[in-house]
Length: 413
Image (tube, rainbow, N blue to C red; front, side, top):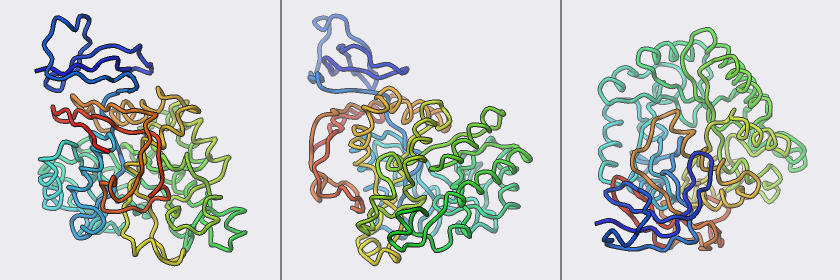
């Protein structure tokens, strides 16, 4: 039996369509002209709702195996569905690292029964330490992986970087690159600038990212291949990637949504929930990120969901772990950005943009209310971690329904 979605505003192909009635049957949505001609099992008033293709997250952290106290496969999948994501690419930084067919299959098999679809990023170096290469070809031919990277770890060895690109060309693989020079950012805790000087905190200069992006683009130019730059956040980095695209290099890029929400000034309270890597930059870098989104230099917006346990964050600032849990706060962040950037562009960067990189999510739908308010707390949190500065606060923007793997799922408060 079909479900009637009344007065739903669909966002697709860069436009917000006029409110219309839609029929949802077997996971497929179609426009309805005469509602009296069909028999509906359920009717949902969607007058205040928007809908789009299911959202895709290209950068998501996981704890299982080995760090189940941070996030399990089950809790991650629950968080993704509650947050409107139909598909997510998980990083390999677990314990053990996801670096063989066994670890890949472990995660994929545990995720099979959940509505949200998990993809795995296989580690390209053993234990994500940047030196010895993993069994890249085995993970591809045995488990079907196409996406490889060391997740939150950087690939600082130029020779390994080149060899990885050469290996991945054997099957059209994509290198997901967290471009960062660890020595230039050694001991850094936040953005290097006026605020870090004022606080007396060791800073991470833009140079640490800019040099790595420039170096990696030169290697790509030499060796060929395909690179996706993750969580870029400097003005020069955006410009370098813009020029590389114009040159015809196979390059794409994303940014963390919270880089558009917060800045380094938010760290003046020494709240470790704001401690992330790459760090929050200043106003000029944010302007460059916004322009990069608008002109197509930046293809996608990611949650960069990095769950951490309480003890890892509730510590002296210098000792606290990097990372922010970013799934259920994703839509409220979109709401904050919607007036400046528009829903059409924002939705493009979490649907069409990611699809160009990892492929289409079939028969998925996200229905959300941009105005509904709710409290992000222990009751509503689906993750096992709560390392976000908005935890305990009232937020605006609520996912109401998702269609995933043919199921219509109502998202409870």
